[in-house]
Image (cartoon, rainbow, N blue to C red):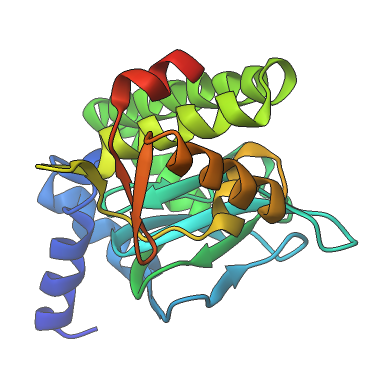
Length: 231
């Protein structure tokens, strides 16, 4: 790796919050083991059973993390955006991947081998703190998802999903909150543990009630209070 490539790779890693303040020397020590990967939309990065070599730090794009059954059913666990990391379960025991990672947009990741990342986190208190906080947030999000799947009906789960998408990706205009993220009905279904047909039917009901509008694959939240009453 040339000096220019090394500088570019370190700049990519600094886009990720966990490593934004890591020392130059510590970054330099990572360089021999790093793998930079570029992925096109819908390209699978790894599948369940694949060897887990390291943790991916997402420097651009969006990644879907999901569980897939043998008969092809899929449950979306999370989306990871620029600045996030994924594939972290390998830090526990280095076993094979248990989930699927798929690029939703053109994406670039920097993969850090598990032993090198483990060594870095042991010696960098700031990075360890940020890494731990991110895992705690993910734990809380997962608990919320489990609660939704068990106790809420499809309408409530879908309303809450739309509100969360609006909060994370929303842009306000005169029509309401435009969700600035193109997401298919199938992706919504995978997120709430439902089917595409049921989600499509429920969204149509939301439209008739004036809760939402649609613009291509974008959703506009027209009545936030009405959605909150359902969630």
